[in-house]
Amino acid sequence: MSKIGVFDSGYGGLTVLKSLVKALPELHFVYLGDNARAPYGDRSFDTVYHYTLDCVNWLFDHDCDLVILACNTASAKALRQIQQVDLPLRNDNKRVLGVLRPTTESVGQFTQSKHVGILGTTGTIKSDSYKIEIAKFFPDIQVSQEACPIWVHLVENDLLNVEGTDFFVNDHIQRLLEKDNQIDAILLACTHYPLLLDSIQKAVPQNVRIISQGDLVAEKLVDYLKRHPEFANNILKDGQREFFTTDQFNDFDAKAGKFYGQSVFAKRVEIPQKN
Ligand code: DGL
Image (cartoon, rainbow, N blue to C red; front, side, top):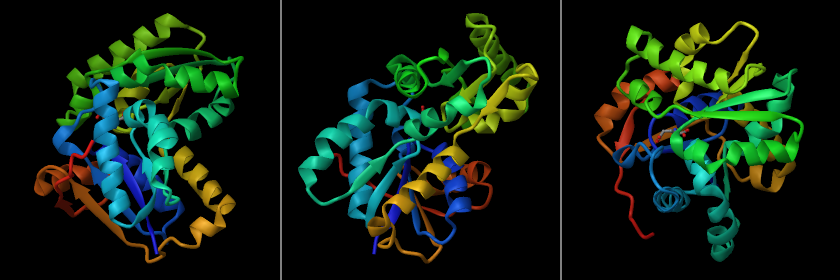
């Protein structure tokens, strides 16, 4: 029997795991956070690809036949190469899915003005992946983007609901809205950002919808498993969750609860760096 692997550079993917577990409580999930090498947001394509592939291989080696990249930076910079180059070489029917596609497929339902804003890490924004993917599904939607490099650090340092954080959140939101004042939907294209929701809501005009990804990704996974029963039938249904980090487990446990919504007990792992 196999398990579902969920990967993120660190803690952010736990906001996605929370939605996955809510939608599919019976399935066995294995979470891996590459905290020792996070953040990924400012790293090159090549580095993000190699780090992500190391972690995906580790999850494959730990009984996961399906891995979700619950990290926008990894989905934007590594997923295509893993799907198109690495998976075909394995010849063993393992699969990797990202968070970009489920989000971009759904974004049209949140906007009436057809002007959408994207907030993400420098890597995600520079890759233009959201612009490119949204254009495929909704060519009439105009997309404006803003990189918020400091936001992940604010979240990681637990600086939530403080004045300094409000300042930096507001600053990036205003910059985004200055690029296009017809934006009526803003996508949080980084799995850390839902933790800044209070500050974001204060900075965003009331007519603008804020879109978090977790539930969208969960909805699409439910649908994917329905369409692939041969795959779904093979997943262990014992409702268990396992947590692994590449850094200190006690640091992970102390912070992870905020992202996941309940206590987490992780184990530390060494990831072989084959790539
Ligand atoms: N969780 C990552 C994402 O969704 C951001 C964190 C990082 O920079 O490593 O893009």
